[in-house]
Amino acid sequence: MRHLIDIKDLSLEEIQELIKTAKDIIANPNKYCEKCKYKKLATLFFEPSTRTRLSFEAAMMELGGNVLGFSEANSSSTAKGESVSDTIRVVGCYSDIIAMRHPKEGAPLVASLKSTVPIINAGDGGHNHPTQTLTDLLTISIEKQRLDNLTIGLCGDLKFGRTVHSLITAMSRYKNIKFVLISPDELKIPEYVKEEILEKNNIEYVETTDIEEHISELDILYMTRVQKERFFNEEDYLRLKDYYILNKEKIKNAKKDLCIMHPLPRVNEISTEVDDDPRACYFKQARYGKYIRMALILKLLEIK
Ligand code: CP
Image 1: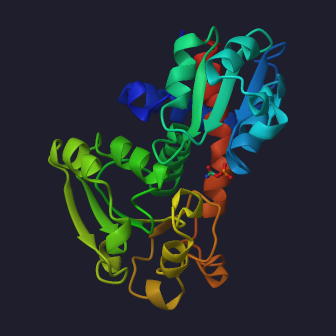
Image 2 (image 1 turned 180 degrees about the vertical axis):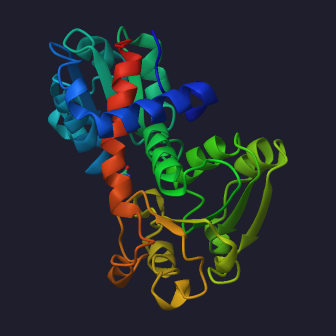
């Protein structure tokens, strides 16, 4: 039985296979509409979500399966003190596969040790968000037609942004990738990401606080929101939340085929005036999330 806890749980070949399946689902949805008949996906969300939970649920429905679950910890027996391990053992009696989001880093890994069904990490604290990364890889593969030879700007909250950590981990395995890490000093990428991923793999990167300094070099600009829920101090959040606001002026020197991404939700970091720019890919990215999750469900349930 396979789980997906960290993007590194998948080899490059497996990621390629998932991307290929997702593209085939986009082209031939009818081929897949009964693949998960009689199967059930449980979505256990101990933390709020719109895209991840609903795209997982839509994915299972479009595969002909059913969904059950909860969207907040307080509506489950967690509120009575039940442990994650016990919850998982019980939900495994009612479902074939579980997608789980939890505010505690490592909770999905703990769950996977006790589970009788595959566990998918749908985001754990400021740690990892592997299915967002699969979504990002599918988006890049479709919009740029390649996953190598890319200069990728990551902008915003690089400290707490779990999507950023997972994306750096994933992209570091492709050839000729360069990162431009754009953040306020207080929200720089954690040292462990620099040391264990970037430096260990000899990946070229620069750090800057200025979003316009390298804009003309970028193939991808990945914007992120400042993660309010991870701050201990409201004052710090208020000071940093609008540090970057991407608008038309800021992308005037960018490449014509720049791909602007954002895992969403957006707060203020991309002005709505950018939404009509052909380079804005973030709503397409949200749509691609459903297809790659369909491919992942099929893989973990070992359905051809
Ligand atoms: N991108 C993402 O994880 O969005 P949600 O928090 O809405 O699931």
